[in-house]
Image 1 (tube, rainbow over the protein chains, first blue to last red):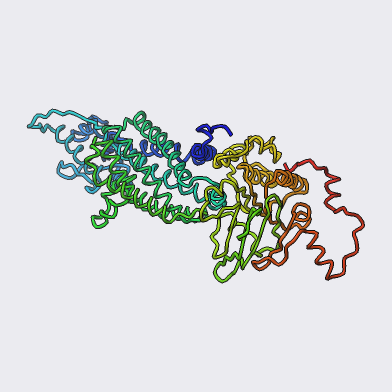
Image 2: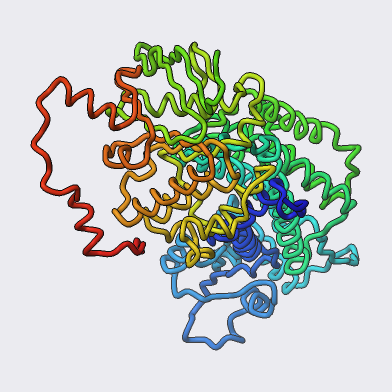
Length: 358
Length: 255
């Protein structure tokens, strides 16, 4: 028998099998690579930052339809001229109030007795509150009020503070969790359920190489996942990458290993794909909600914050955001890194202890 | 233990699952170069016995020597020299025939060329077909090929021909004969008595976890002939299966 080439070694063969099984499952490729991008596009478009729209102001001009616009009087003409609001005229109070109630206008402006102007609005509605200020400014200025203090303005739009900047690291963390737990757990339980794991145990196959092949293929796909999602975020939305890229890579690597170990632990005993799916959802669901993927985990009450901080995905998301958005050094992320590595060690040791090879 | 010339020696093997004694004091000797048949009804303990011999199950008690080695001392070396086909393995549907065999081949130090094994089980045309597209008979032949690819000294086959059509069955018989001719040993279980009669030098009948009869098929038939009236001789030595094969040919065609 001639010397075996590297590709004929069982580690290479086992790893190749992982690649082949993955790419021959179009649905797995979709959920790992395409879905996070679609999600990012959807969320990026839905929550894109834009100038607040002009509030619509309803007016009830005196003698509408009889007098022509220039005859409407100073309050109305100055409103018409003001470019910060859109003016809509109503015939009478009841039509105006109906428009206000149904949210078609933010404020209703009408003439009151004694030459006064009456504002009808709901101050708890942000848009109405703003409209009240804009309308009043226009009317008072039109009537001759002068601003005693001169101001200058500089307008900024800071990358890193937008929703898309918040959500891209969250999606990356969620993806690392999903592909780590699903990718490892599902494949192992599938092989156990088909008695293929038992068949392998009857060969001289090295058990550590078997497990290693899962990690190697996981790390390869990790690189693709991270580059796809972050590259997309950077090119399409200009999501910043302020921290060290090497440290970002290290955070991703440790996170992927940690979730893979968790996947291994979840899969250590389960015999059926159905059983392990339930278990995985049970583990991942709380993290989808609490770990700050789509909204900040600080929204939850203080009492549960220590628990939330102990979840691996919270640590991963916090570390990713700190690196990408604030450029924080990994040395300043001691707590997050400790949580990630802690889960890695505990899950891996427990998984090896519990693992059922047949 | 006197094990000279034995590929497999089993003494007083016991294995219980809770209250059920699956194997209950079983003794077995399989000589090197023979094909040994383990017969018996479902639940008799055949698969448990064979899986203990394969090192897949722990035994409760008893002695076990395989190819002059034991699972306690020589597990890695033993695994390298055994070929195994399990009753219920499903190979990965996403891999091709060739990829599956390359994977199994990579586990063994010494072994046969993947291409040769594919030809041996007549899956040449299916070399690059996904396992998921194979018929039941083809999948079974691939499972046998996986057992053969490490060039084993001792082959365990657990109901290898169950569910196969007569053509595939006879093709498999041919494989077993060839393997035996090369001086290798086979332990197989089967529910088909004609198969045991044709292939096995010796058979053991197992029930309730121990062996109740042992000998060559001829010897066993004679023991019955001595105690009960012999059945009237069959008009010919042919079976209905011979008719089936004569009419439909020997070519494999389980597409």
